[in-house]
Length: 306
Image (cartoon, rainbow, N blue to C red; front, side):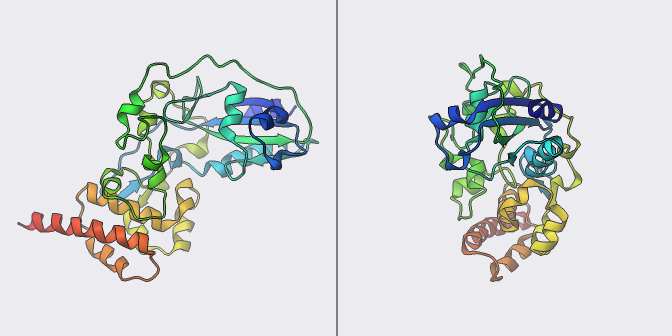
């Protein structure tokens, strides 16, 4: 009944025995559990462009936070059943992608993302672990990237040249609370995350899952640049907090917004950037990046005046 209930509200559901997982990767937090249900839920293949006065993060953030959506669906599906379970999304020690790979419902692509035959890589993963053992649901995966290397060619920082290099990944570095290298500043394209290797993937070409209203783009998919400068952390979360892009905090988003202003040669916010440099609430890693970006923007402003 657990499988059937989850199948009603998720696009993909697989089941593996805990023991099989523990052979591959031991995890103390799985002791006492018998089965792992792996669920997947697709999100839309919609691309929003950056605008002059407002920016977007990666596509997966256009709708509401997938952590909340997936957990809500798990609990709603299982709450009236006599079953001891734990619903997990991201914030735990179990390797979700390994679990999914073991079900055969997806494979790891050359872009280091999990790819499903129907959803491509545009889906979220969650786990339900149960105290009772259930029948395994496993498929034989026959798909792979083959000789395709479009994602490798498309990555602007060569993060996929010799396997996935997280130190060069745009999505990794623009979520890091550290000062950025000049190359990282110049090549950043998003308020948070990156979609390049997904957008060029042939498995995503005809995928467009529009079934989940919470994942459809919301007005607050766009973050107003003025709000990044003017709103308090509390007010910012009140307005934008339903989106997953807020998980690293407002300062990360502001720093990345500055890189986008530089890319667009938009000098309208130079004075606001100056104000942040004199504000003690901003950390040194932010101020270092802001100072370097401001210097470049000031040169652009001067050249416009000539």
